[in-house]
Amino acid sequence: MFAKETYIQRRERFKERVRSGVVLLLGNEESPMNYAANTYPFRQDSTFLYFFGLDQPGLAAVLDLDEGTECLFGDDPSLHDIVWTGPRPLLRDRSQQVGVTQTAPGKELGQVLNRAARQGRTIHMLPQYRAENVRRIADCGLPRSARNDMLRIADSRGSVTPSPDLIRAVVEQRSIKSAQEIEQIETALGVTARMQTAAMKMAKPGVFEYEVAGAMEGIMASSGVGPAFPPIFSVHGEIMHNPYYDNRLQAGNIVINDSGAESPLHYAGDITRTIPVGGRFSPRQKEIYSIVLNAQARAIAAAAPGVEWREVHRLAAVALMEGLIELGLARGDPQEAVAAGAHTLFFPTGVGHMMGLDVHDMEPLGEDYVGYTDTIRRNPEFGWRYLRLAKPVEPGFVITVEPGIYFIPELMQRRKAEGRYNQFISYDKLEAYRSFGGIRIEDDILITPEGCRVLGPHIPKTIATVEALASA
Image (cartoon, rainbow, N blue to C red; front, top):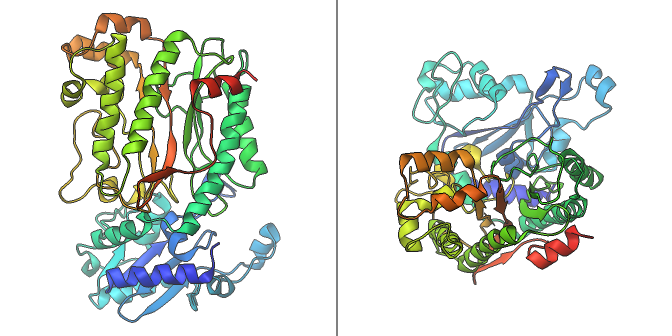
């Protein structure tokens, strides 16, 4: 973990922003895989990690902003626990590592919250994405008087309405990455770079996708870290989040490798490269790849403080349409085509998202809080609705830049049948691309006072350098 002072300073800054009420921050519990004693690898809640740094299950924290107290709740290991896990430090010793002096058994959490509720005090909490934490809140037995705008136990399932004030405060603080955090992200990207280059070398005809995915998992494990998200390694690059690795690679395939490691402190890396199986892109693949690479370069060049990210997305979409018009797959004015939404036939996703302790940073808090403002609202139209970040970017933001071109047969068939975008799309020429797949190129950037810089070690992405590594 970081130095104790880092967590103290984060909490002090946070308390200056929220000021009053009682804040509940829940850590995560162990999550059973197929029976209670056989659990998934533990992953702590990212906001709990940010403010308290303790990477063990079964913890919760209460910050009483009116009384100026901080208390960590959890249980010390019993003799039965020690038999299975070995000796572990006591909660009071762990809490001192992050500058907290007050601790209490986990069973007292409900008592503390109920006392605050009976006093009519505001209880702030964040949205809960795990069912076991929703149950923990419900099990606290808060009375109906606690059902205010900040907290609602709405029904017997314990659904919760979280505190908008708390969400905004956390988003505001976590969005700006410190030098320590950037160092962690670049550590994650160092492992990710080894994963990516290994995959390029392994992507040969006859190899199964799971062999490459397994090798990348091995690189992470041998580096003492885990994945920031399940790797996507697939010849079906037109499927955005494809968790399957069953295909045998064949000469002429292109494969998307979207993967990233976490650092030891759980900061994410997220890189995508598109690899020609056997080491050479076909002429048609080179054409599409060049369009995507140009769009990414233009998006990165445009990223600077104060620039609205939705405009970077628009710029990338125009660049993609310009290239497709040159190939004859589209026609007309590229600006007009994007305004009409024709680009979404090929690029239905966003150009990038915030990244940090979560690969889609702070997504559990709500994308509209993270990526939008009271005046910059989400566009509900197809393609635009998946843009996770739209607001002006600031120094300290870490953002992915990942344009792509995807030939999705079902989408092309649907839009053609609907007569959509006929003014801009050459549907007859698209038939030759039905089995093409997709191409995506992704890097992670830090917004700086002067513009931006690409984070992490260089990973080949020009046609020449990718082919050189893939044919080695």
